Length: 55
Image (cartoon, rainbow, N blue to C red; front, side):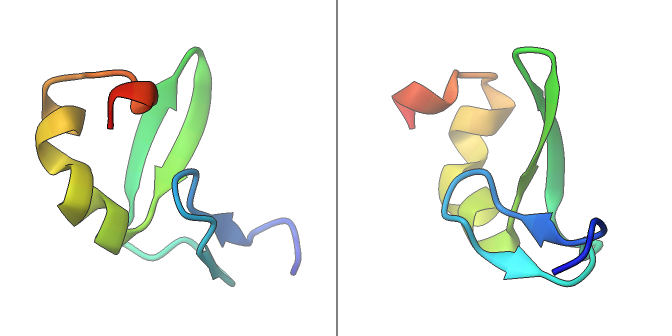
């Protein structure tokens, strides 16, 4: 994979480029990508701004 590859910070799923359906969030000052499946699974926690350890 090249430098434009997208990796889900939750499950490790990868795509060659970041899909428009993936979520971008800021976690402790760094940008994290979350795939569509993990976004759907953890949407309430994300909207409540819970830290990932609570998911």
